[in-house]
Length: 483
Image 1 (cartoon, rainbow, N blue to C red):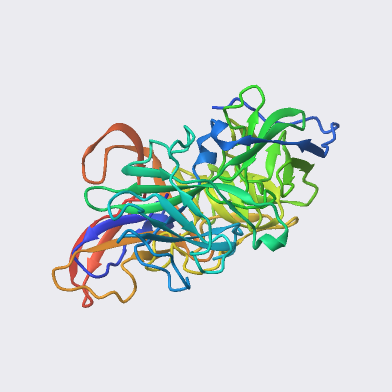
Image 2 (image 1 turned 90 degrees about the vertical axis):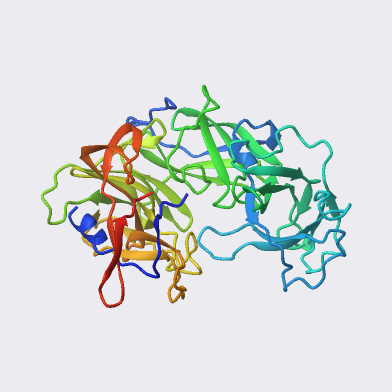
């Protein structure tokens, strides 16, 4: 998912001298349009029925929560069982995370073994159900000889060497004494990689999905409630997946903006906002019209002579995602210069912005200095403050900065080593990342290395990188593309 710019250079550190100048200069068929004001928006409570995840055509529910495994035991675990394999696999997973809390949720440790010896195939899963940090006293899940036909991960995933489906397990939110119903989960081991390098992952798939027909502002929709990339334990979690489809085309999605497939999504239907809530058991879905205050978000020119302005995308708050833009068409909000959204503090999920002849794509910055795709405990910045009587105008007046995600700060490089330099352009005040910057008035048919694209696209304003020594002597220069 990362759109971090990167390039390889035989030096220890770089200066993106010209990067800042670039920015400073610089089909679903559900049309949800205006509804007559006289028609009141109503609350609705709808019953949902349980179905098997293996009967769902939507691959999202079969994705599962992914965790990378390791070859070394965790020191926190007090005792592991004796292994027949000389290469057991170790892992940990957190179920029931909160959307804005690091290391939240219920932590479980697990290990995998080859009962017939090293190299004979992983066929036993030791999972610490009771969370006592002793994997010897829990039931052992074994490799399924005949797993469900759709239990394996999608074939579109590259480099998969082997998949192992284990017996379904049941986990509790906290301890069994808490009185919560157990959650049935399918563990799946995926071995992937190229050549001799093998990456070991476990995925955990919730085996139950709840579905039913609902009606919102006169629109008949099919609702499916379940888990995709995160096991939420209770279905009432904001991160629970909620997929809404037109009743007449249930295989399509009615809402396709980033964050629209969460229970915490505020949907825009006929120009009005609606919120959703589910029971912990997942058997009931409540739809309510949003009755809070609205505020204005707009794109502004700042001090630049820019008149053509537009925005489309979505925001995220700690427990809410909202569409940004005009009416919803083909699942996404139309681009507009300004729009109204529920009052709150937000970060940008994804925003596509028209800024004169520029097209700019921005999102939250999910990197840290020296760490790619890791915030390493950095708190999220909800810097877009939407208020009832005070419009928030994004005009790109904040001074941009460069964050190096590689190499790490202070990393020592030996003479002759090759170092990967990876950086992203950010608005440090909003902790917002520039993912794409294109000139719509100019076209390109070749990539940064001069190779034909095979098609025509807008010119990407890739920053130029200049690499110098400490005394200012230039070592190398080149283009560091976005994407």
